[in-house]
Image (cartoon, rainbow, N blue to C red; front, side, top):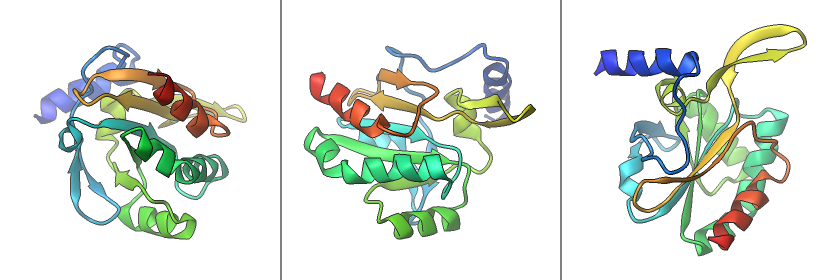
Length: 170
């Protein structure tokens, strides 16, 4: 299995593979902020809003999380589960979740395996410096595990509302 994940990582980093709308969402298992292990397949029959973000506690990531928090009941009314994923540790997720009273699960991907699998670990640049990092991306996955919508290069402000409006329109 390690070879498959390494090949996936290589393909993703070179931009040859992205998870696109209409495709089956890759399954994964990651540790959640409460310590349990969570698999995507656990949510069969439910819509999953899977959002990848760079770092707990940074301004954009905090804004995005708070907007999802403030609309969590509306997402739930549409039958959607919200899952946030970053490379941050479980301890960091716990503090972030508690500080901002987030009612949804945060998943830790410290090795970036799932970030690679979904094609969100990318070359980025800031102030003339290039580095690898998480591209803020959201996948809406239907109850049968098919990606219905992909939001790439997300701007945090207003993103949760856009996702919710699209969910209501389907």
